Length: 482
Ligand SMILES: Cc1cc2nc3c(=O)[nH]c(=O)nc-3n(C[C@H](O)[C@H](O)[C@H](O)COP(=O)(O)OP(=O)(O)OC[C@H]3O[C@@H](n4cnc5c(N)ncnc54)[C@H](O)[C@@H]3O)c2cc1C
Image (cartoon, rainbow, N blue to C red; front, side):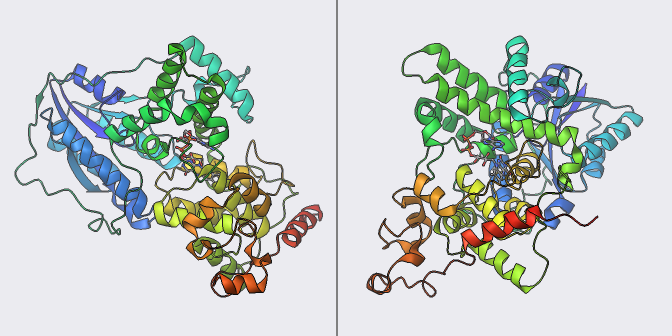
C-alpha cells in the first residue's frame, strides 16, 4: 500500500499518530505539505507566524530526509492540491491528523469524500488535542460552558484513559528517497508575500522538546507566581510549538506528570497549575467545536454590555494608538510593542491590553482579535477567540462585565519595578520607579531633567481610565433598544 501523509498542524516526528499509522500500514510513503494560497493571501496571519511555520517545515524536511523521505510541497487550494498529489503518486490511502476549526472541518469533509469517491482510503487521527470535544462532556452529553467543570471532567477522563505516547516511527518503507529532480526549491517568506521575520522563539521539533525540558527543570516549580511577572521568563513559551504541532499536548502533560512521579525538588501546585493551562487550551477548542458560531461573533448576545464605539476618526485614532503602543499607559504600550516586535506577548499583559481596548477604548473585541491574529506567532482561532471573548465578557465562561482592569494597579502589581516597561518602551528608560506606572503624573521639572516630556517624547494618556471605566459601566446599565 502507498500512503500520502498530509502534514498540517503536526510538524513533528515524535508522537505523530497519522505518520505512525502510515509507517505501519504502508510500504511506501509520500509526505506532503500544502501552502493554502488563499489563506496566505488574505493575511489573516502575519510574518511572525509564517516565518515560524517555515522554520518548523525546514527542520521537518531535514528530519524526514535523514530517514530517506522527501517532504513534498504544493501551493494552492488545499483540496485540489491534495487530490492532485494523491493522483500523481497513486496513493492508495491518505493520512492526516484532524483539525477542528470550522473552515478546516469543511475542507476535510470535502477532500475525504472526494478521495473516497476515487477509491482511496482515508485515515484521520486525533492529535491536536488530548481529548476531542465529544470525549469530555457533561452527564447528559452536553458540552461544558464552565472551565472548572470541564477541567474536572478532563482530569477524570485522563485518569481513566490517558493516551500513550508514540515513538518516532520506524521507517521500514520504500521511500521516495529524495525529491524529484525538477522539484522546486522550498518557498521563502518573500515568495509567500511576507516580510522575513526575526525568530524570537526558535522553531522546530528539537527546539520545542528542549524548551519543554528546560521549563520543567526550572520555571515550572515557581509557575503560580512566575507566570504573572512579564519581566521574567516564567512561562514555557511553548504556545507556537503547540500551535504548529512541533510538540503534542500529550507529550507536555506526560512530561509534567513524569517530573511529579520522580520526587525531588517538585512543586505539585505549580506543576498542576501549568497543566491546567493546557486544559484551558482544550476547553477553548471544545467551545469552538460545540459552538462554531463564536468564530463569527459574541457567544453571549444578551444585553447588558455597552455597544462599541461607532466607526469614525476618533475610533480610528484610538485603535491606531493601541496598535502602535502609544496609549500613554506604559504597561499597555509595553505589551503592544512586545507583540509588534516579537510576535509574542505575555499572557497577563494580553489580558490587560484586551480589557483596555474593549472596556476603556470601547472598541469591538473582534478588531483586537484580528490584530492579534496578524501579529501573534502562536495565533490560533480557538485560543485567541476564546480569550478575547473572556476579556470582553462575551464568552461562555467569561470575566464579569463590570470587572475592568485598572492599568496602573495591574502595572504596579505585576511589573513592580517597571523592568518590563523599560525593556519595551525605551522613551521611559530614565523614568524612576515612582513614576513609571503613570508617567503623566511626573512633575514638569522631572520630565525636563530626564528628557522625557509627556505629550512629546511619550504620549499623554489617550483616555482617562476612571472616566472611561465609569462611562463603560453607565452605558452597560442603559436599557438596550429592542
Ligand atoms: C486576548 C488573548 C489572546 C490570546 N491568543 C492566543 C492565541 O492566539 N494562541 C494561544 O496559543 N494562546 C493565546 N492566548 C492564551 C495565552 O496568552 C497564551 O497561550 C500564552 O501566553 C502562551 O505562552 P506560554 O506558552 O508561555 O504559556 P504557558 O503559561 O507556559 O502555558 C502553557 C500552554 O497552555 C496554553 N495556554 C496557556 N494559557 C492559555 C489560555 N489562557 N488560553 C488557552 N490556552 C492557554 C498554551 O498552549 C500555552 O503554551 C491568548 C490570551 C489572551 C488574553
